[in-house]
Length: 172
Image 1 (cartoon, rainbow, N blue to C red):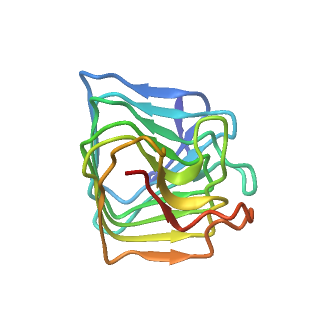
Image 2: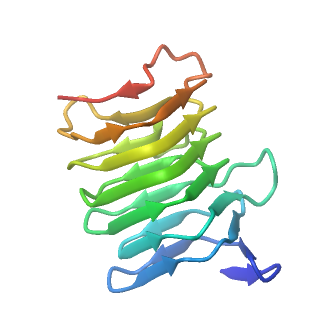
C-alpha cells in the first residue's frame, strides 16, 4: 500500500485500514501523499506528534484523495498535522483530539459533507486552521449530539461551493 519516495516522503497507492488492535504513531516530520482513488480508514489508535509538521496530501495536485474515516472505537490524537486536498474527514469516534493543525482544500465525496464531520462525543479541536474547504469546516447531522470543544481556531474561505452552509454546522 505504501512506497517510500524519500527518507521523509511516502506514497499511498491503495486503500489503507488501520486495524482496531493496531496503533499508528507518527512522531517525525513526513509527507504522506495519497493517490486519488485511495482512502484511509482508522479503526485503532492514530497518534501524530511530529516536531514540525506531518503533511497528508494528494499524490497529484488537483486530484484529491478519498479522505479519512475514523471509526467508532478508534482513538485519534493529532498534533501538528496538515490535511490537504482530500475528501474530508468523517469522525465516528468520540475520542478525537486535534491540535495545532490545518484542514484545507477538502472536497465533498459520497461519505462527507464537511471538511470535518462529527458523529458523537466531545471532540477537542484546538488551534486548527480550516481553510478553502468546499463545504462547512465542521458539521454534524441534524439529529447528532456532537458537542465539540472548539478553541483558538481560524475559519477562512470555507463553503466555496456556495451551498449556504455556515462555517460550523452542528446539530443539537
